[in-house]
Image 1 (cartoon, rainbow, N blue to C red):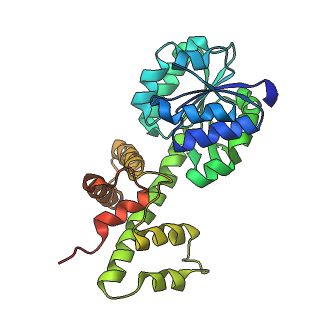
Image 2: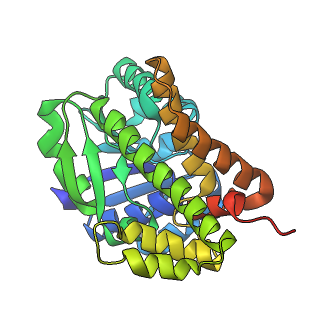
Length: 291
């Protein structure tokens, strides 16, 4: 099955490029497209077919896999002749984080184009993506689940099926709120530690190995202490995800005071020039200011 599977992958940034390579390792045929060609050309050396436009990538493909920035970009790209170019019975695997409203718009677009639509955002950043260790939060039609397994197994360590399309995006928002909240509190904790004359490394050493010592806190905390932020997932994208959380909460009349504060911290870091650095660069907005 995998050897004859044709995947049109639109979006080859940090995550998409890693996913493309794992699909190739699983002996699938990958047609890759990206808006900026310098990010897609290296995949040709790995065996992918680099396409000039999205419709060319989609021609005859069994799967359309989207890993673009947001719903607006995806809708613009896919509307341009992509769905009619797919093979009969093709499945659209929408694996970007687009939020609740964005997912609904893309599901309608899929229905208009006659493609089965699977809402399948992923948990994980650069290293898990490269290692094929993402967690796929899949939701969509029951009758395409088994068909999707080979693709999900190639890019992820675990697939959680959640029901109708939309459930995956909702769970992703919940998890993302937890992640960005942790980052915001961690940034302020490291900043508070330094402001009070406590070595923040001692804080991380103290919590390590216990119930408070999350590996994630150790990893991102070390980046904050060093003030070195090689990008696994950018601050700009984390801010986008925080905004999607706030949108969904707002639709339900739910006040998210902490999430709003963290989003504001990301805005500060981005305005200070750290938007393309790792999301741990939120620390740049929280750190003690020099007198």
